[in-house]
Amino acid sequence: MPATTAGRRAVITLHNQNGLIHLFSLSHSSFTTKRLALSTQDVTHDGNTYTAFNFEIESPTDGHGIPTGRMRISNVTREVWDLLKTVEEDNPQVDLRQVLEDDTETIQDQWQLLDVMRITGTSLALEGEFSHELYANFPYPVQRVIGSKFYWMNFF
Image (tube, rainbow, N blue to C red):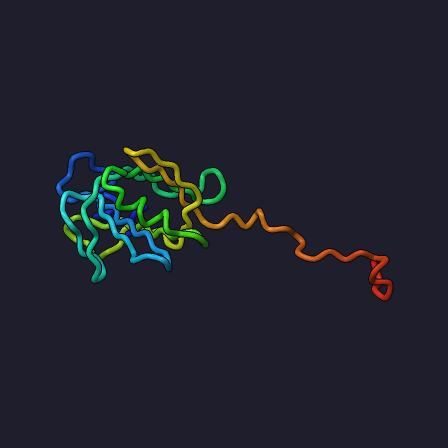
């Protein structure tokens, strides 16, 4: 839920003059951070310019376990696809923020350090899923003790 009363009002009101703007940044060590704003004009936030771009976004929710979000973006210009196809190791990271049209410096809601988990695409659109790293996939316990190999240890 947004942090301020004005932010909560922007979510509740269907037709308002001061709506929420989604700011989306995609970063990786192999390319310059790509910043997009779901708006009709470029948005400046925290000293960075977010390019106006039309996309569909589903904010991360934790209703089914690990917070996971989804995005659908046009692939006609191939701007984002050309960045992603150069990535060879480590997942790109997503930073998603919501700000108000008249106050782009105050963050209403934010999700940071989300990893791009899956990307599918056609010549028309890219669809991606981003989430936190799934720690449940790590082996537990990391080490196993076999009694016959560690005869000096007492097992109760």
